[in-house]
Length: 171
Image (cartoon, rainbow, N blue to C red; front, top):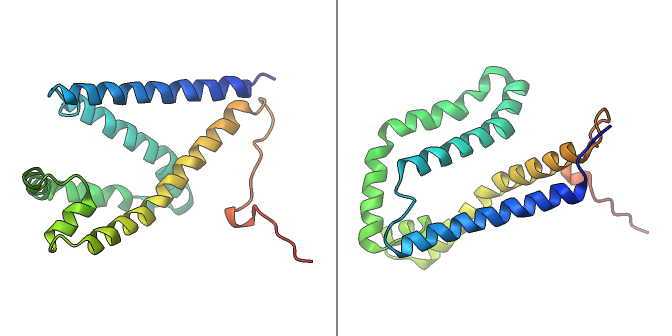
């Protein structure tokens, strides 16, 4: 049966990454000229579509299949939060612009006495909190690669749990 050759998949992946970097460079160049492409409703809508589709495909569908209706809080919480978010976000943007704050760690640190210790703690909590999302993206990449390079009709190679992948023996 047919499958995509691994070099083609890897090459297309790198071409896609180069394209993303080119788009980012263009965005930086436009921002340097004072004409940011980020302050555009189309960019915001498309980025939300990408985020929501990736989260839905790789997160919520599996949860819905395994736990039924209990996947709904994933959507209801953020939806209800967005009802009043514009009040909070507007104030946060105003403060961030006036004090030239660029990260959530700086924002929280500056709100509590410009504490570098607190800002460091917020950074640490943020890094720990984002690890599951990074793992989800890596799982999606490896699953997509396996799907594209496995011959049709053959089952995908199933990996064991992450904690059982490395076997160490003592002598």
